[in-house]
Length: 113
Image (cartoon, rainbow, N blue to C red; front, top):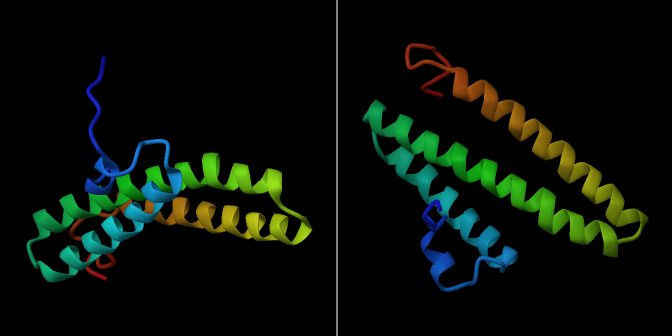
């Protein structure tokens, strides 16, 4: 069996089935990773941080799509369904951007931006 690796420190205070707590902690974690990325000029460290950001965002998007938005879809009205559609489109855009960024090499002029 694969050992459980906590997604973040907050998960130790909230059970894994507390999706809102996990999603909130993800926001804090990604924000901290971006701050750490901007604070360093070491490209190797920036690549590792970027990989961590991509992993966190992928997990976060999956949790939102499969748990939060699914539950919201069951309990919402037409206006809520429009919001869900916008959220799904935003996630699709984020996925496309993440894929593009993952393909960048350090010598690409867009890498440093």
